[in-house]
Length: 190
Image 1 (cartoon, rainbow, N blue to C red):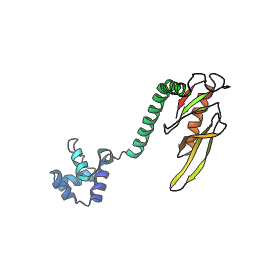
Image 2: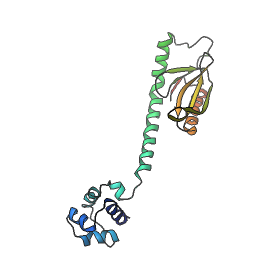
Image 3: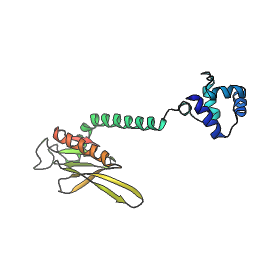
Image 4: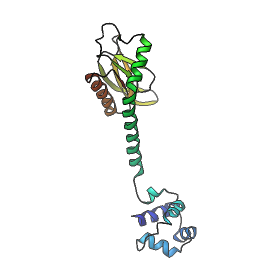
């Protein structure tokens, strides 16, 4: 496959086999053999080939880096979310306790049945007695449609705690909230 990539990116770059060979210090026959698959370049020259063609090693080997980057970004997001969920409940509970002056929650709320949610944009903490929903898609001028996750606060109104690009992302956040509620957690960070 690398032989096809060398030929493809050489042509895209507008180089002849002779020009590429001169850049790499090899003959145009050597480049021709690489491109036909009759021989392969040595491991020591492959980085130079990628550099001469203006591509990454991943690209030269035909590896789909966009999918890998998306997978890596998803893994990083999930790792961060897991770590935040592990360390933030205590911090959120402490912040809620300090902001309302007591650890009892609001009057009438059964102890242990109130969930404090740190919003996705980390701008606020919303306490809910246990009701949440998804709204959307919500159109905004000059911005893509968003799916909102809302929770019922103690004032009996729905407050948006997260906006998501897809309904699936919003459903995942809603499930996390409902799982935290049903699991008896006191707080969650989106």
